[in-house]
Image 1: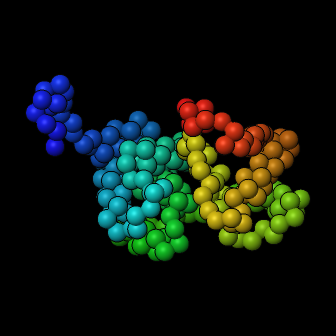
Image 2: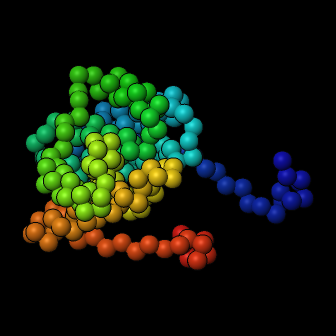
Image 3: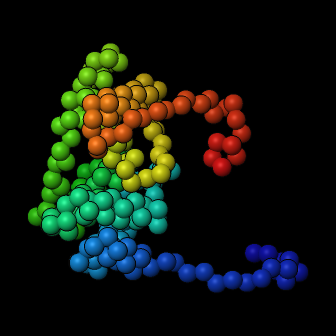
Length: 219
């Protein structure tokens, strides 16, 4: 509570919470979804239930940025598979964007929310046979084992790069963060050199964050 003499120096302004369902509906329609309204409501309900039931973590985000990422993911899938069931495309978008960031104990809760909102639907497996084969070769070159948990995380990181401008790999020391991006970059570069149109050459630069200021690092 500010004192009255200080309040007089400020101009009052009104703010409102954006209507995520309306924004989602219009965005989904712009990507060509015919059943946009109920799908947008389901997406908003998913994030609302997640914010209420899942644990509180610094990196969990259920705001406009998360909504936009899901819409972008679903829109990319709609472009690639225009004749597929739109509900399944949104389900894939929700799973692809959210599953990578959830902790292990929150995943069963999230899967429960998804099964309630999308009864009888299940996420189809994406076809990454060529990337998987290249990842096996990359793991051999790096001297690490291509265990399923590691390969899943690499695939999740690849899917994240398709829908987000920037991301963070978070985990304990020795958790596989560095090997994750190294394996993905060498695998994608190998496929690009082999003539793949889907995967591009990857160049990464490693910076010591303490060598530059926060402003230079984050803008």
